[in-house]
Length: 115
Length: 112
Image 1 (cartoon, helix red, strand yellow):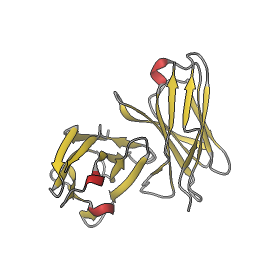
Image 2 (cartoon, chains in turn cyan, yellow):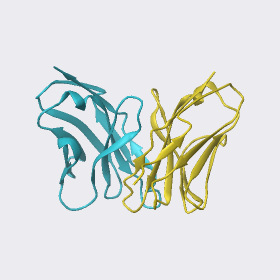
Image 3 (spheres, rainbow over the protein chains, first blue to last red):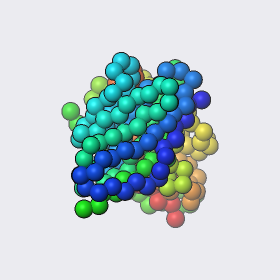
Image 4 (tube, one colour):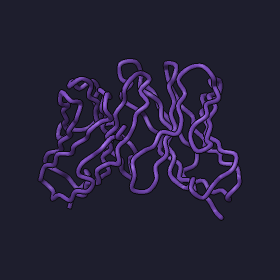
């Protein structure tokens, strides 16, 4: 069965600093991986996805993630944090064949950005 | 294209009552999934509908049910509400494999 672990429920960075949010997954089949962001009182917005092909995936708002099969990781990075990046971030893996409509989410990482 | 819409946005109900939440997917999307989000349990999958058929179901009691109409709009129903059903209920729609899902703003349900 698939699972997702996000290391660190809270991450705090200074404006302009590197953002690194960690995600490790467990999957018995080649995974499809996603990062979503949630701002207060809103739904989830898709940041980026990995399906097949290039392991470095670029998303919106300057975020990118690298799929590392050997490490079962899909960490999210952004070179320079902006105040508007403060939000909660969720890593997710698609369900196995026949249950792809079921996304399995990590517990989320709340990102704070200090001025 | 309009995004996923959910109605109502906020709802307050009393224990024992039932509630129906509505979701309109992005035009052309045939798959609709529902999730429950709580501070303690995080995001949990409820069920998925595709072409009016429930394709997958999460680990929730039978009090939680749903349906999908021919225009892909979906509803979920919770009967005999309990305090623990207080949560943000999110609906998501998708068009094709590998199923990146687009989420609505959610319905915040409070059970008193």
